Amino acid sequence: MSELQTQLPTDTWIYTSWEEYEQIVTNLLNEKGKSYYYKGHMRLEMPPVSFDHGQDHVVIIFAVTLFAALKGIPARGLDTTTFRKTGVQDCQPDVAYYLRERAQAIPAGTGIVKLNRYPAPDLVIEIAKTSLLDDLGTKRSLYEELGVTEYWVVDVQNAQIIAYTIADQGSKRIQESQVLPGLAIAILEEALRRSRQMSQSEVGTWLLSQFQQKEA
Image (cartoon, rainbow, N blue to C red; front, top):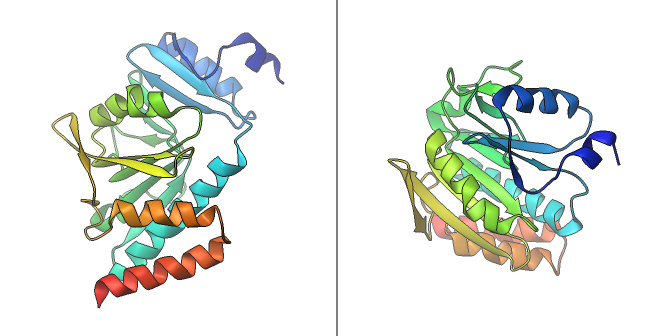
């Protein structure tokens, strides 16, 4: 464990100025941790990440990308990328997607995605093993204010997905994606359950059959 990790509490929100937060994040560059900043507080989430968390991460990315490909929806997925409103908000969601005309909104070579300059993602996904209540609470408020269009929380423990559509800095539960019309949350949950018992390639074959069936 690094000196930084022993000095700072993790998996909790602590009061910090933006300047202090920036310094801490700079020191974190080699730590592979995730960091968030919201309403004058920061949160660090440090490795290790569980097997189940990592597995669900891969299944969800595959499912969303496959669905978008089959529907001909331009999509750009991002893995643990930093989105920032300097001095105000900062986040590193597990997964984010820009869709349709926004798929090309962020140019290659961009480091931190500055939300004062670029749009917020259409879809943000957090994979929650130990952070479920925070993902459903404070982080949801953060993504509402950032202007994300849709937000999913994957409950790893129960193989469930709590999905929200976001508008006017508020959110509402949904059972079907609004940014990917026709994609039922229940299908994704079944894919997560199946991934507990079969290989991801078999889950992929099952998802393909479900998505194609939906088209027929």
